[in-house]
Length: 301
Ligand code: NAD
Image (cartoon, rainbow, N blue to C red):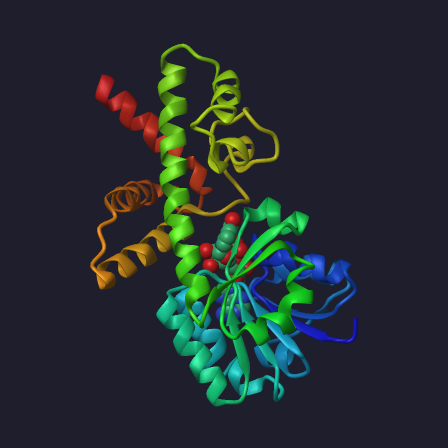
């Protein structure tokens, strides 16, 4: 591969995504504020930069995978990517952030002569590791086509949602639905177990019935039902409760400004807020099962 790629943000998602680019033979320079995250990539053959300027200065395509709005604004606008990237570079932000922030950063990038797309992902850490993510892209179709060969090394499905910011908008709608499905799945499993059912048997039945959904079939929240999911490793290494809470906050912002009613989304946000405030913010979002169990026990006490 002749293109030189910079990858910034090597956490639960960015780490395995960058590894897939290494494996595909891209020349990769990486940066993260956490040295441990960088180490895994240098062991796989990537070059480590000391700062953002060093990471982006020679890159043709720059990918970021950061926690939220403030990190993206800092990395792009505050003396970072836009100040140091080489002319004509294509910028791809895969973080999940507010659509307005995505549009503002893209507009600032365009003013400086860069091309930029928002390309948030769905598919979780397993999808990141397997290279089967779904990319949901906002921006110019031509810029998506320039990024497509690279995105195909990390994902299986690539959608063009519309103009700048549309990728973020679609991603947030998806994650609001995911939160509702995870809580609903937890509630159904907890009800069945308390009614004397085996969670594995119940999961199998519902997976072949009309209650089937991704949280149940791919990311089951009950420990021991599935291997290789966060629930079966102490709710570690997945999609953090605080990140889901952030996404539900973004959904509520959109609902508020568009004057749209989202009763289940609002309730999901309140439950994730309570779960985070109970000290579970760093656990995977499927640990909401614990809150459902605790609330059911409190009610029956
Ligand atoms: P994470 O917290 O594991 O990783 C974020 C990384 O960004 C960390 O390694 C952190 O050190 C780094 N970082 C923060 N500020 C930085 C800076 N200024 N410069 C360089 N690096 C910096 O988060 P994650 O789970 O990888 O999620 C990243 C994004 O992807 C979030 O927006 C999240 O909502 C979204 N997402 C996550 C999942 C998932 O399953 N984890 C799924 C889809 C989308």
